[in-house]
Image 1 (cartoon, rainbow, N blue to C red):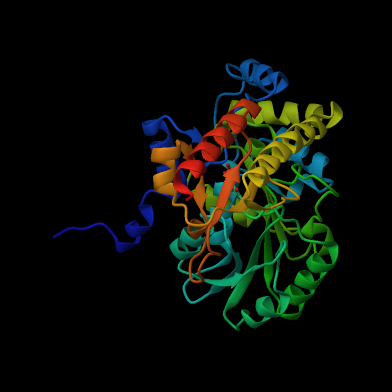
Image 2 (image 1 turned 90 degrees about the vertical axis):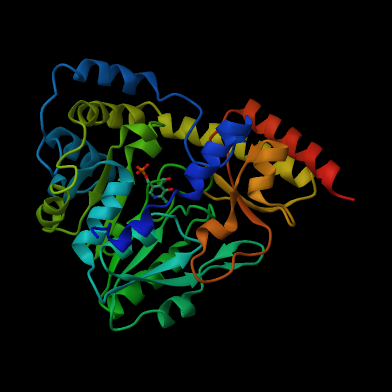
Length: 374
Ligand SMILES: Cc1ncc(COP(=O)(O)O)c(C=O)c1O
């Protein structure tokens, strides 16, 4: 009997999609999935309206030249090394296809962002997980990272700033990781889709430490509050962009042409007009609102240095029950762990929502906690 390949096991609904579905079904406030409640900026929307009707046909798989140039200009790299993709997700997928195959291993940290595991497995590789340490803050266990490297390791896959922990690598940590990669001759994939979303010092860009072995992933969706546009990029080590872009030509071929044109126009405006600074200030206020609210409910939180996610301990609570009874959707820590157990009571909460939504979610949580705590 004809059958689907067993790899379709990987097609099951993600916890993020599930929680969004349940949130809609139960009229819950959705602090689960990381998409902003705010609309994208007008300068981006207006650029897209102008582009539709004038930039409508295929672009080269490597990307619309003017967008490659705009990304390169923004990041201070050569346009020759930039590939435009359908969001950070396709960028990561193209890299998995280009860098690993059967019998290879890819080392990554736990908790991890959900697409990393299926993408490695689709390429035939095995993810090797290194749990982060959680004390008063999230920290990378560098000796454990080195122990996880074997002769089969192809790459270290990192996120900076980090989803779900909200942590940011210190320069010293980043340098130690780069030394490890050099010593064992590994690629580094640095997922930097939240590169403009930080609350202290700007995060280290791994590429600047080792341009010859770092692939950087970026996302216009995250930067410009347009996650549905599906425009992202890869910056490759010099000379490798054509081969990596050649891999994505067999899936989407190219990203939406007018949206590429709009992002090309918007990137320099966002930089010049202080859009990212304003975004950081706005998210900083919402982070404080959520964090102080959770603390005043007696809950332990781990203050994020970047991203729009915050981790907290809500011991004894269960996500499916919370969405139904408290009418608040949040993501259980177990969603981010493959082999190791998640810290007891760990949840991730997204604060890319309006202040009203955050306040209401806090009120509902407080009310629910009063009901269930003896
Ligand atoms: C760490 C991380 N990498 C990549 C992505 C995917 O980015 P995009 O929406 O551009 O595909 C996300 C989205 O949530 C993310 O959190």
